[in-house]
Amino acid sequence: MAKNERVLYEIIYEQALDRFQQRDYQGTMDLLADVGQWPLVWLRPFLLRAYALRGLGCYVQEMMALQDLLQVSERIEVRSASDTAMIAEAWSLLGEALVNLGDCRLAVEAFLQSASLEVDIPKRREEYSNAIFAANYCSDFPTEKWLELYDGYRTLLSDIEIFELPGHGKNIYHHDRLRIGYLSADIRCHPVAYFLRPLLECHDSSRFQVFLYRANAEEDSVTRQLQGWADATRLIAGLADEEVALQIARDEIDVLVDLSGHTKGNRLPVLAYRPAPVLLSGLGYFNSTGMPLDGFLSDVYCSPSAVHPAFSEKLLRLPQTHFCYVFFEDFPAVTEQMAWERNGYITFGCFNNFSKVTDEMLLVWKNVLKRCAGSHLVMKHKLFDSEEGRHWTNDRLCHLGLPVERIELRGFSADYLQEYGDIDIALDTFPYTGGLTTVEALLMGVPVVSLYGKRHGTRFGLSFLSNLGLTELATDNKDDYAGLAAGLAQDKKLLRCLHRELRGMVQESPLMDGIGYCRNVENLYGELAMMHGCL
Image (cartoon, rainbow, N blue to C red; front, side, top):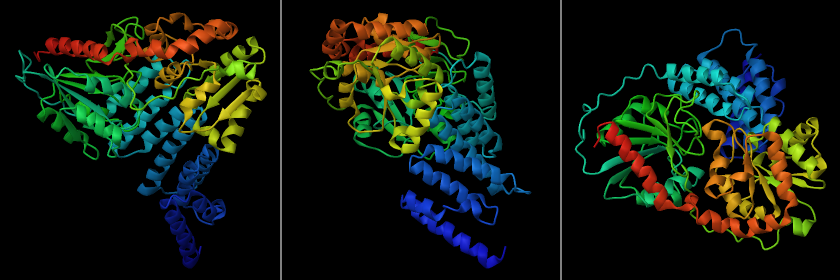
């Protein structure tokens, strides 16, 4: 290729990059429309095209663009460090696209491919975390596979030297009050904030000092409220893991609680330094970190036992709930009339992240719809904002034999809570169950039917419902799940009663008893601190 011809393509790329940086994603695509016909092997424009499609919410086309990039990369005879970095990035983006499209087993493999190519250790750890997180969406992911993933992640932490804290003994830091640190990238308007709030707002300041280690750089009104209830906040965004660990050690934290697990933006490597005598995880994640921590926050419903073969941590079983939901804004009123009274048929609904909706769960819902003649199903997710997302999903539903004419796909909307007025019964997902979404449905007067397994994260629905005295709406059997949903749909008197009473039941339950919940958690902190010589 002539030099001046390559310069022309470089100019086009720079123009496309400028459009992308202005968030003109369609303009970016217009400039890169024929990138596949460019007479040069150059990965950067393929990667930019994938990012633009991601910005447009076109996950199917994004997946295809990334597959094109990976095919082009095979024609590179000698890869530069830059080429390898872009290929690793492409695998990571492909993993995210596959998660959005519900192909989570392939997503796990894509993230692991990215990790294998990353030369930067922190990035490699991040991709491994992505793989572990994606595995939670998979049905029947075997224990031995979990353990393999955890072994791989711990190997990436093996170069970290554990801090030497003061020797364990009576009150090693000589604090009058225990110092509790919360480490999170979600100290903002995020589901974690709703569950963190009671631990800050209701904490017993005569016994505890609370420190926030905020890994999110951006802040909003929720950030400011949460920080106002803490004794101190450390902004750690952009700091290296060792720097964060040193800050925690300097603050003489007694109990450090990770709220992220393997979710996006997590700082799990900080815990590998053991910067505090007691290290815990929970609330923001629903599965083991795979690290040798001192405990994982759970409850008697989510964890039948304190040990589980796929958990590296001891499961700390709170007596009622390990979640307490305190919202920051007023909820819309529960509708007077139920959806079935307006429509003449029962409407089931699921507003959970669609990545949680496995083929196995769709087949269970197919059984539900079969048992309830004329019933409809509404699903809601950002994937359905685009025509291609709806088409992709309808193809998947048709392949599984679901009656697509009775299924409505709704895109994202800020006023989604009001849309619960269109739903009679919410259907929970499995094995990755609803969390905040389940509580919101119940507060909007919509009963939830839930399927649970043996692992902590599969039993959230059971825990929520048990704390309301509605254990009978949860089951560990798929056929029984369909039967519960169908039976509830037929019992119009019970449906009306639940619709009318559910909000009050939630508000008066342990799920919204901030003070009672906080005391249970603080008592646990005290017991652990005593065991580890902090008191």
